[in-house]
Length: 126
Image (cartoon, rainbow, N blue to C red; front, side, top):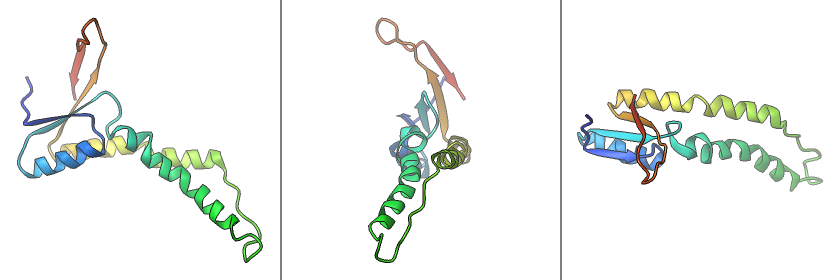
């Protein structure tokens, strides 16, 4: 049996902001998520995009100055850049899981198999 004041569906940025405020107000909060803790933005979207976009923006900025002080621009090594992205992004779910423990937040991970009326087939508590 679970007993929470607030249950967030998903564990992305918006849920974290709301959960932190609620925990500070003394509420018992949990996240329900079927993927990596931190949601899409942290693990696949925004954060990863920022890491990958920055070198290209830098090189493109340098190209605008070619012939007026900049004579060459660096090449981007995509393999090295992806390795760096994985080094930065991959640990984030584990770090966020530790944070949930410190804040006494619960994380409910689930695997949903939709049957007939979208019945929740299995729910696991971690």
